[in-house]
Amino acid sequence: MRVLHFFKTFYPDTMGGVEQVISQIARGSVKLGIDTDVLTLTSSHVVSPLEVDGYSVHRVRQDFQIASTSFSTAVFGRFKELSRKADVIHYHFPWPFMDVVHFLTQVKKPTVVTYHSDIIRQKNLLKLYRPLMNKFLGSVDKIVATSPNYLETSSVLRQFSNKVSIIPIGLDKSAYPKPSDERVHYWRGKFGAKFFLFVGVLRYYKGLHILLEASKGADYPIVIVGAGPMERALKEQASKLGLRNIHFLGLLPDEDKVALLMLCYAVVFPSHLRSEAFGISLLESAMFAKPMISSEIGTGTSYINISNETGLVLPPSDSVALRQAMQYLWEHPEKAAEMGVKAEERYLRLFTADIMVEKYAKIYREIVG
Figure 1 (cartoon, helix red, strand yellow):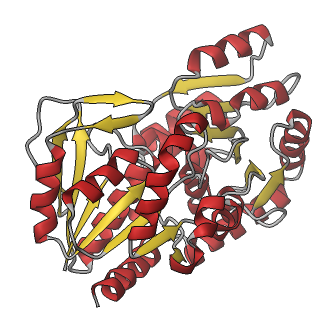
Figure 2 (cartoon, rainbow, N blue to C red):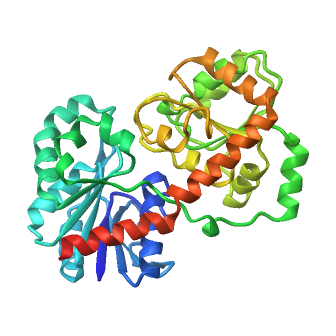
């Protein structure tokens, strides 16, 4: 069997949440004997195919981008060519231009789409796009939601519930680098043995401004790993609030990120808008047996983090509740450790890459017939 994945961006240009999911599925599919191609757009002039972990990445030059949607005239021909060889086409939503390619190329192959997120921010554009979106989702053979929570709270997914399956995102811990003793010693020397950690892109929906507000007057260290469009505003806010316990580290190599995940006391993940559809960084926390603090936003974050079992789940945008949650974990180390153990148990039961890939392989077989 051969599967073609199609998304607007991928490694080596970017490695965000959707790209990580595609990579995990592709790598795991290869282990099951499923030949895998990934077709993507790139702003780079280098468009030669890449071999990554046994699967092929095909890149086509991006012509322009409008409202986070990439466009390319050259991709139509490349998509047709790769589709002819594929048994299954695996789309990754949302990307409105993908719907256009799907219809204009008129490729008649079994199709599955992983529904990563509703369109949240571009509400006016969504009104224009909705008829095409509904036609596209209605035309595919299978839709995959990444959590039961998201299916319940997405009005779009509920329209197509008769063809929706739930496959939670899974991670392969063995694919993460093992940090050297030197890096572990370095970070322990910098922040001690007890600190809160956030890992992620610094975007508007991550709720870090709420975390900074919640940190006023606190004396425990809070380490923020990642960069992004909100970085300058957050650093200015921290400075105005006089926060000396906040440490912005920017982007770090995976080895350092893993070292910090291993060392941290707990992970705080204050995303307050449902643009945070799942929370891969939150799942990484569970994988490393860390108690978590997150908000109830009706998405996969509350499927990963079960309130009072694997961590604490709070009302969104509530800096007082967030402050109280951090204080509670800080003052109750035995409870925090117990939550961390349960978080890892839940990861092993529901969220490994092997479990995810087996479920996708089953869907591929079903729709091929």
